[in-house]
Image (tube, rainbow, N blue to C red; front, side, top):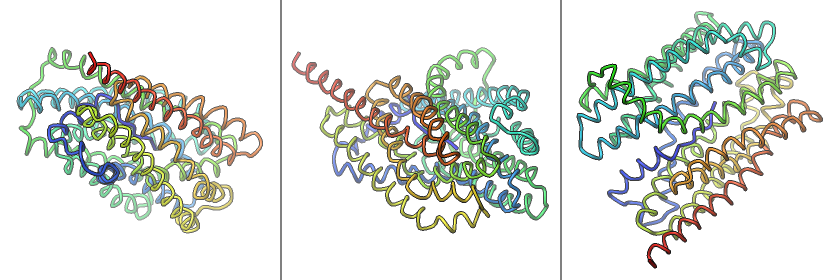
Length: 466
């Protein structure tokens, strides 16, 4: 699964709305960071738990080819999710502006146009991906029966992409109205439905990957329904867009969503490259990588949420001209990330045997799980540095820098290290290289972010002097 990194437009709008009350311009900044991150992580982690549950039940079939197939499929689904996140940022930003202007009719129209465009874009994107699935799976390195299993699973699940797009955009609309609880419950209910359907369809009905894909359909339908119902019930329902209004709405939506999608795509590109490298070491290696990849966001969901949570805090203090608190929020966020990662890494290490047993992992698959749950998970701290630095840059007017850092991390900060260490240490070396590459870019991201803070502070001082 993915890293979920907020973009500048979404955070700045959110910061602006929250700034009316200015609750972050006073009080303990570390507490603000902790509370915002912990509350934001609930709905976010539900998305990641969905993937983990799916893989867990598939692993109970004790078929390495099927488990590996989910790993290959995950690399493909990562791309589709990235587009959904990016579009939701654009729609949420436009709806937020209308809500802030107290123009409920415009907010309703913007939400409707965003949902229609998202569903249409999702259908077109799903059709293109579905048509070239054999080539995509081959590029990822899947062969033989594993490739057939991955293709089958994806061919059943990919057509449900419009439902996922509607759900993600709808959740963004709810957050734009300030309804964080209902926005969170959209994905929570998706996880609940999947957890209920998976054992029935995969194990009881003995449908294997077909059952997993159908359970995914049910989960995505629940996500879409739980997003649309509150909008209809509590926020004025939907408008009647015309072809012209949709065309006109597409321009501002994609002006914001374009950079967001570009930023989000960095992670699945990097993951696809690593998947291709690991594929050379067999199905057991891909299965181990898939399990580690899905454990990461579940274990560190708070860190993924940190990127979005710190944005309003920095934004409010920037608006209040308190650059000392902007710096303090930056460093407190890094401290919070370190505490969470050390604590979660300790839990993973103590539970590594139970985790491996739950997935019926043996041999190389088990070795990779133990590697991730050991020292490797501690290196996620440097990804946390990138998340915090990106949030700061986004809110200080340097969103392009965040995009460049993200792409650098998942290309130059992944490929050379993973390839080199993989030559000597096999599949373990690939995963170690992927993590080690983050050290360089994590430190670079912090240095660049501090330069942005200093530049903004200097500009503020010069403005006062003038």
